[in-house]
Image (cartoon, rainbow over all chains, first blue to last red; front, side, top):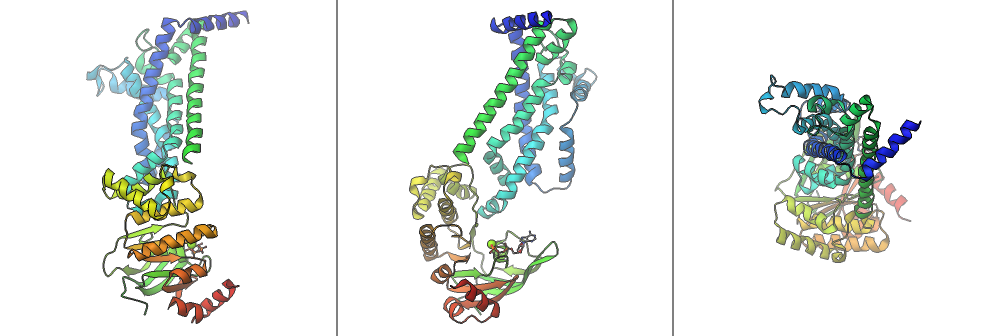
Length: 234
Length: 231
Ligand SMILES: Nc1ncnc2c1ncn2[C@@H]1O[C@H](COP(=O)(O)OP(=O)(O)OP(=O)(O)O)[C@@H](O)[C@H]1O
Ligand SMILES: [Mg+2]
């Protein structure tokens, strides 16, 4: 019991004093996961919109596939990206393995299905409501998809957020493709895993607290944005 | 049969959805400048309108436009985009590739014609039902369609808003746009329309000039409908 209290106090000190090592780990974590989220939104949202309004063979198969891929195990994604990026792999020549870029790639792959599947649901509901109106005004399907993405921008934050939550919290993928190299590819989750196993609880706890705080803050901000948008735009 | 030169011809038009026949073998010519489609709930008025507008594909027969006409439609519950009223009116113009200064001008002019220049910058979804209905009319009108389909344009509006919308419809018609509208308001049909299509259970059973329809309805279903609807 005493040990946990001591660790908590030390963790608090680390946060309060803005410990340099802690700060760099948190910064890298945010950089990697926010970039991955941004990329996943750029890929996943148009994809979701096309799945919602498009008419092409294999659409249903794709929808089922993306729903299934929402549950992709991070270690498996890590392994696949590892194989792609390892020296003998098809993309080995770029030397990306064990860099933040590799981690961004892995997390992007991990969360594109989440963003796409959730965006598809949002857009599909809107499409049901808007379809005839947009057609009557002369919008093509592609144009309608773009309109719906813009119109659903506030609801779609939920999809982006779900992706971010998954990215920032996963260990398996970044551990495998990043390698948890001190000062280079160490992020919050991999540090927590390592330091806990080494017995350095204060750092692990401090990171754990920050991780929770980050996720809560992002969710709160998104919630408030949606509330405001609902009030403002209906 | 019918008033004026036919600009829309329906030839044995039918629509069956999930084995249910919604529109049944409708053949007619629309030539009037202002046509009202009347009939009881569930008769198929909205469906017929959407077929005419091309939003639904008929499962039987065909429709024919002797000369291609540009069309617009205002839905019973218009869908507003999550943006300002003005941007909603601009949207259709944008789709037609009309660039900003002219687009804004035309959209603003349309809002003025429906008496709503003051709410141009307000979020469209926050407007009252009557205001949204007028924004929808402005949005359709801004495109200057040659035919405008209106599905119960004054349902759920109070008498003052209804009168305002009726005034706008008459003005649109006066600008040369052909109007086809559904309504449950018989007074409104009488005030606006030149010709009435009466539809019952998916069949258009009567097409008459408006005065004739209200004074001497020919079909028994229309007679019953008028007896029930007039106090
Ligand atoms: N997609 C569909 N599948 C099955 N039935 C449908 C479908 N769309 C409409 N219907 C049915 O077709 C009939 C006609 O519907 P429609 O909306 O055209 O009636 P309406 O005359 O406009 O009625 P109201 O006066 O209530 O607006 C109704 O019985 C309706 O339930
Ligand atoms: Mg209807």
